[in-house]
Image (cartoon, rainbow, N blue to C red):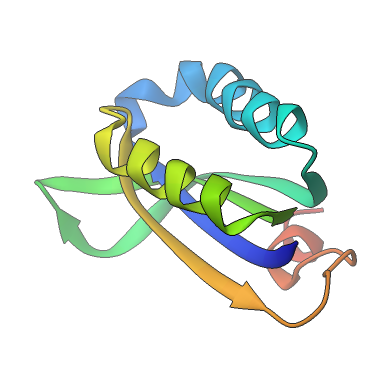
Length: 107
């Protein structure tokens, strides 16, 4: 099992579906014997530059532990999901459990 950090951005007009999107990806990870070490909803934030004429997006951070096959499935699903504006997946050496800097500042 490998550790990954995923940040994905949901279209601002689809923010009402964020909880459903999180539940969907959480179920994929949990059903494949993966683990979610950290899950943070950063909320609606301004983008540095406009993407597809949008100036805001809803950000979600996940630190997960899954097999490589499941990670490929997640990446394909992120690409095909019409609610997701952008995403990035980064492999990490160890699980990250502590709160992120973004989450500390929101409190």
